[in-house]
Length: 198
Image (cartoon, rainbow, N blue to C red; front, side, top):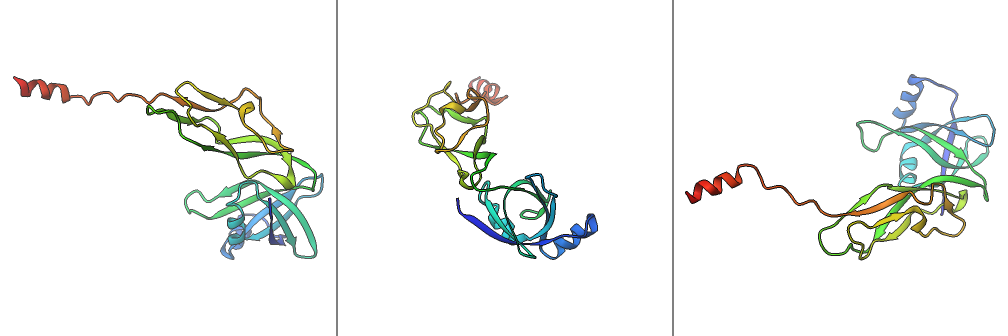
C-alpha cells in the first residue's frame, strides 16, 4: 500500500470555537496517539485528507510543521451529519514499519450466483484482520460463482494475503445466499378479477 503524504500543523487551540475556525479555514482538527506517547493535536488540509480517506485504512505520512514526521492510519473519522464530504474530526493511530495492527478490510465479491433469483446477503461488509501496518490490504475478494440458496461463506473460507490473519472467530458468517421471496399478490386484485368474470 502506498503512503500518502499530508502536511499537518500542531494545534494549540481547543474547544468548539477553535474547531469551527479550523473548519472555516478548510482544515480538519485531529489527534495523533499511540505508542504510549502524549497525544499530538493537529489540523490537516480538508481536501487532502478527504482524498486520502477514499482508500480504506490508508497509510498516511504526516509531515508535521516543526520537522516531525509520523506514520499513521485513520482510526476514527467523524463526518458532518448533513453536509456530504465534510469532515468534523479525525483520530490517527501512530504505526511503525513491521508493527501489527487490527483493522477492518472491505469484503468484495466476484462471479454470479446460481440461476434462480437468489439474493446475496452481506452479514459483514468488512472483515476484521490483523496485519502489518505498512502492508494493509485494501480489500479481500470472495468468489460467489455458482452459489445457491442456503450457501454461507465463513471468515475461515476467505483467502487472506500473506502476513494477514483473522481478527475474528473463524466460523463467523460473512456472506450468505438466500432464496428470493415470492411477492404476495396485491390485495383487491383477486376481487376485481372475480367481479370482471361475473
